[in-house]
Image 1 (tube, rainbow, N blue to C red):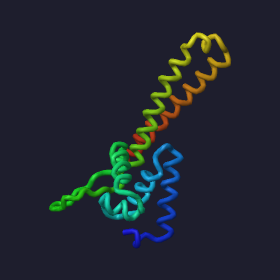
Image 2: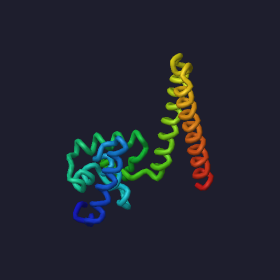
Image 3: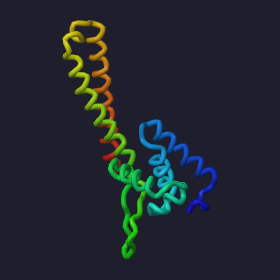
Image 4: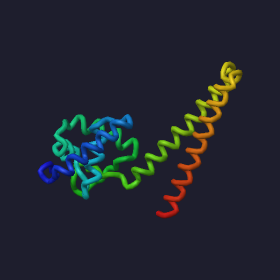
Length: 154
């Protein structure tokens, strides 16, 4: 498979890996996503390892993570015992849902922080926590509207 990837595609796959690494996901996981994004069909773990020139163990570990996050889906072929993987058509929606969960979690943490006596007594700190909570609420509302719009278009 690696011989079918142009230098331009290989560079793009690496850029996707670096992007995901900057978001707290391993670079290998990002590179797997990049490879699956530019691949029309499904790939086995062995094909992914060969294409990216990484170990099968690393692919297996990162595929499990990507399956859990919903970025990758399993694809089976009748009569073939090998498991194949594809880029999830809902990957971006899963990303937005994950951000929604983080925004809701942040609101809870900010509410708890705002109840600390020293924060309540300080005008500066009280305003800081209120402002951050308002922005987290705004972000959550925006993301919910975005998801609703996407789902209505499907």
